[in-house]
Image 1 (spheres, helix red, strand yellow):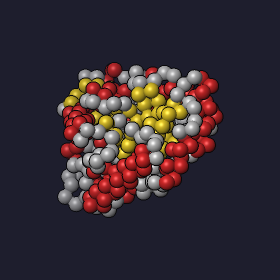
Image 2 (cartoon, rainbow, N blue to C red; image 1 turned 30 degrees about the vertical axis):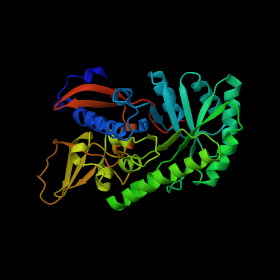
Image 3 (tube, rainbow, N blue to C red; image 1 turned 135 degrees about the vertical axis):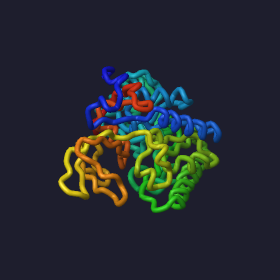
Length: 348
C-alpha cells in the first residue's frame, strides 16, 4: 500500500477513496476543542474510519479512547496499540462473552448492556479468567432500537448489575441515531437536547439510589454539538465528523468544505445526453439512498466526457469507508499517507 505515497491523483487507478488530510485534521481539531471547552471527554466512534492512523490523530488531539461497534473492531484496535475501548453495542452469547473477557485482559474494555441476563453472562465469563469488564447501560432516548427506557427501567437494571462480581457499572450511554431522519436543523437540535437531558436525568436517579454513575455518554454526529453541551453529560462519541458526507450536509451538520472523504471515479459511458456511467457503484458507495454508478446531469453542469475523472461525495461516508481496503490521504493533488481499513465488513 505504500506504493501509493507520492503519486499524483492522475496516476491513481479508479475507483479510489481519498481523504483530504487538511479537512480531516481540521474536523478532528474542531471536535476536540468543543469537548475541551465543555469539559466533556471525547471517545470518538472508530467504525466510521476503521483506521489506526485516523484513530491516532484523534488520540493525539485529546480523545480519551475509542468507541467501536463489535469485537472484531475492538481486537483490531487493541492489536494496533489502542488500550481503552468501548463496545457501544450488545454482545450476546457464551463465545462472545468469553472473547470479551479475554480482550479485557489486554486493555481497558467496556461494553453496552440493556439486559440483566446478558450482564450476568458477561460477569460469569469475566470471573472465569479473573478479569473485570466495565458495562455501560444503554438508554433509549428516542431511536427505539436497543436500550432500556430512561428512569426506572434503567434503575432496575443498574441494581441488578451492582450485585454481580466480574463486571463494574461505568455509567449510562445513548445514541440519538434518529436524528439522521430529522427534517430540519431545528428538529436535530430538539433531538440532541432530549438525548442529553434524558440520559442525565437517568444518571441522577441512579446516584440518588446510591449507585455510582460516573459516565454519562452521548453519541451521534448530527447532535454532538447539542447533546455534548448539556450540563451533566460527561462523554461524547461522534464518529462521522472526521469525514462528514451528503447526509450530514442535508441535516445542516456540515458544509461541503468540511467533507474530507471523496471517491475518485472515471466516467466509463455516455449512453444518453443526460446520463453518464462511472466505474463506482454499490461496491464502492454502498446502497444508502441508492448507488448504481449512474449520474444524471443537472441543469447548468458542464458536459462530461468518457474518460473524465470526478471526485464525488458519498451519501454515507461510514459505509463507503468500510468497503475499501485502504483510504488514500491526500494534500492537494498528491497522496501523502495510506490508511489501511481494519476489521472491514459486518463481522463479529
